[in-house]
Image (cartoon, rainbow, N blue to C red; front, side, top):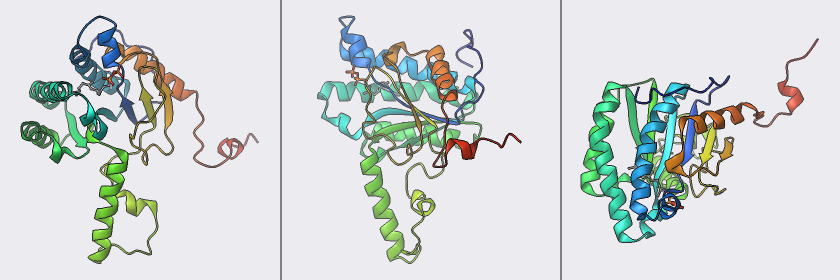
Length: 252
Ligand code: FPP
């Protein structure tokens, strides 16, 4: 594993799926008098360490919000810089993913990304698709509303073709048209940098997720921070509708 440093105490129950809104790269750079892209560069390092930290802690799926549909509105040089970083990252990580048996996949409209990035994404997904123990999902050109629109369109097409029945109003059926259909819902959503918004991230899938907000800026986020988020998650009671009493086993 890439991060052999001291492992914090093992939490009692580890969320199977953690999703992270990685925020604060710009502020990290600004506070050091550096250009924003330096913050993103350091942010990529944190992507690497967190990928393996989560796996070490027993997480099965890690989803990272790397580029939103709204991020195209940023200055052109920042968008270009992020795409270049993504290319470097994918070129470097492919070997590591294969060695460490990480299944890599994406969510989001990747067909709108630069062709060179798309090619690397296809290669990385293809080379790691048979791994089953641990999955890293990068949300790229992702927006939850866009995802719902895409799913509704695909669902309507299936109804028109007679492959779905409009009388079937179950969530399980519609869920099959979301980009995360093959993944469990996130148990824990973390946002770094002190912001407390969801920013169009996994709106459907996070319906019953627990949320953890930390002031730590993404480039400073460590394995200890991740373990602290998991420890906090362990103090929550997840009820999914029933009362607390209903969930507790009868004492006699
Ligand atoms: C938010 O920081 C960060 C993003 C735009 C997404 C995260 C991007 C990375 C970690 C780098 C690219 C990732 C890969 C995998 C190549 P911000 O710029 O909004 O920070 P600020 O709110 O402090 O300005």
